[in-house]
Length: 253
Length: 308
Image (tube, rainbow over all chains, first blue to last red; front, top):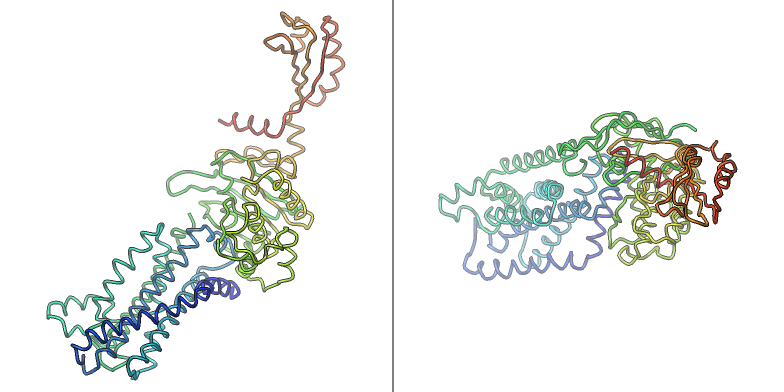
């Protein structure tokens, strides 16, 4: 294992994050505060409690999941796409680095950034609501697995995309709508029956629901189903990336 | 000298059906400078890219210091440094950081003293903390060379290192290449500038339409294929070429003011006095005599044209 190479890729990717550290921290703090103002205060004042939990508190896991999904995908996809776009990818491809090592460097960095952002949101939320995490280990498992699996998805998108439009299309047209419709800011029990059934086809619902369960012990779907889903999703992404590297898809002609 | 790179029957057909390389066989000797010449699309960059691991070959094998570049890619690749044709650099990266990154990618532990010396050798030391976007084109090319050398490779590939570089900088590059050769690095360069190959390469390989059509020592090529010509400017133009000179294969210019003779081989050079006597025997007065030798460029153009 070329650990020095993994470290080199990881550090280079993280450098971008640290070089804009102010923006990296301030941005999630502001957006979290805004969510609390809009959803927590404006809407929350009309919704007393959801599943026995204060609305402001109820939305914290969904809000975190929203940030984790979008940040993981955009960080990882941009990282690898930027190397392809600028042509600097030649250096990695000509170096004695295996596919796994490339993956660990890029995905590790993207997942780390998301983890840091998620943690900032969690800390900021504590200033607005009183949070008690009922199942901290499960919460941390979901937290890490989500960062990793969606960073893998982002990596796949970054490899697949050959222009900026393609790079944006999945996060904007698929991830964001799925997150909003996946019960991030509500319980699906609040929806009409038909929409509840439709929502069960939304994979993000299982993530949000499982994550929320780890906080409050309440969920829209069974926690085991949620864990199975995130496990399956992670395996699928690993499989796709393995195939991409094996065939040299969009990397080696 | 033993071969540090052995290329055997390497072919490449791209997905669109274009066959870029046809069963290439080539041994590159340790410590030599090999120049690959060829027109655009000849397959030079494809060959380099396959050796360095950027492109997958369709068939054949490549050994780098006896390590197969596919099955033992780690051992093979750590011996190679690549300077690409385009200025592929992160515009916001600092020179020093990008060198440390390159060294790390190749699994080498940080060695600031070596990198510092490298920057000095490439006249980049004062640009150490500059961002790439603030450097001139020539400086960026030097950074690319520094990056390729950051892990102390034994083999250096330079893909058109002097493309778009001014004459002064080109000469600088030649000096850098010469210094590297002296330190024992094997250098393979592709170039459009034939004078470059003639000036610095030990051997020249000409690639055309995916095949190596010529491979030999530069001096040997010049000796074997470089033709010498004699040009006589006459005091009085001739109305027609005398039969004796015609028999000796002299040619006359359209205006009759010049005579030309093309030597077939080196042995014929000894005949110059005899040829000149034949001219003066015809009562032709010579104003000036010039001799010239075809350049590598003439040889290259001839070869490529003949291939077509």
